[in-house]
Amino acid sequence: MAKRRYSVPALERSLDIVELLADSPDPLTMRAIGARLDRSAGEIFRHLKALEARGYVARDAGDRYALTNHLFELAMRRPRVANLVDLAYPTMREAARQLRQSVHLSVASGRQHVIIARVESPGDVGMLVRIGNHRDLVEAVSGRVLLAHFARIERDFLRIACERAWGSAMPTVIVDTMELHRRLLSRQWGAEIPDGGLRLWTARTRYGLPVYRAHEALTDALACAELYLAQTAEIAAERTVTLGAISS
Image (tube, rainbow, N blue to C red):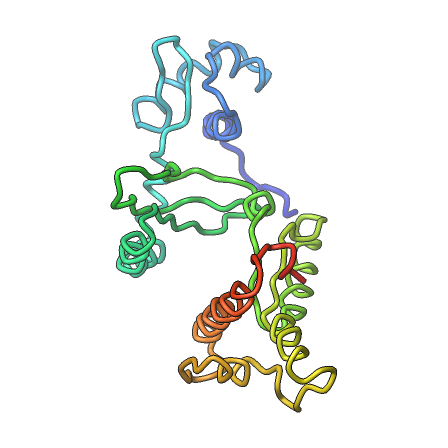
């Protein structure tokens, strides 16, 4: 780390307060803030008043301080973030309409992801996550399912990336449409599967699915999802489809 050449103690104390409140799950009194920062209440009084006047912190009826969304709102003014939200909103609204569920947009911020936009459910009941809410990225994917065709590539790449960043593998269940296709073809062809028979686009022809341009990330993801729906429909015609039965 490069050695700092300049120091502004008053500014640094204000930033210490902001960072402390950002990490605290509950509002803190002035005395509690001073104790955690090893400062007297008198030392931080003016900093808290200035931060409150500028809208960075808010004080409740019990004289406890909490961070507001003002910093988040400032970050949202950045053109790159604003453009992302503008581009995403039409798709999010359509997804919410079709799914009858709330849709949230999040971005990575260090080791966490932060909710930057949302569209409410058009139905009478829906679940909302507060804009600005942040959560550990690894915890956020726990319980989720990774769907891919020849998932070994994604699995190994994500495992290495997660181990480097967090020291642990990504806690997700994997459903591999190529493996599902192999199982389905094995019933028809036995151990002998034709050359190229496991490729994504070959697998899709089994169900009469439309032809897309190959090797584009978004198109490939959509093609994989459509294949998965066709495969599980075929399996469901004979038995109940469970995650344990189709996961790799």
